Image (cartoon, rainbow, N blue to C red; front, side, top):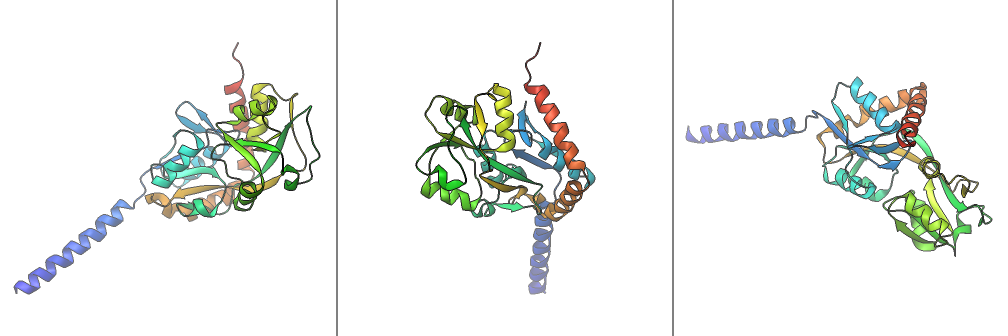
Length: 263
């Protein structure tokens, strides 16, 4: 009789533990973060990350009836750390790399293809047909920025690229003569030039250096990771029915108004 009671107690304890574990996996709220300087896809506004990408996932979360908060958690490197450690449930607007995939569950499909450009000073252009033309020159890129697994390997092995904190610092290095080129995604690069009033001094070379897929990804430590397939369905719908294009237009207008000098 005693043996049966012990077995029953163990069974109940195991059942309760399994139930508690499942309860912990319930997603009650999605806290997302992203790049603080990636207009128009993502940018810092107060304590929030705004832009077309947060608007996109916010709409999907709303349809799924899951509370959503897009939160500023520091620099791009710090935002990635927050997602790796589970402090953020989601990171918005991230390229795929094998290293990142160890900690992130990428939502398929990507929500946009993001061209990456080579920016140069207008008075110091050079012939550019592809990545090999950067060999032997001094480059600058934003700290924590990845350009995809293949190009990241090329950059590490073949190029001399210094990392700096932000595109403003990168363009300063270019104009001061400390760099021959800046590698930056097209959207934030051109937006930052506009903000700084440098459109007449810096230009992007053609063709694009590369074009990478931009993803939403869940932290593998988040209880919300199980929603990845549903978010994939939402991204497919909103990128094919025209709604995401409108969100990009709305985000650009908002960012432009935020950064324009006030009278």
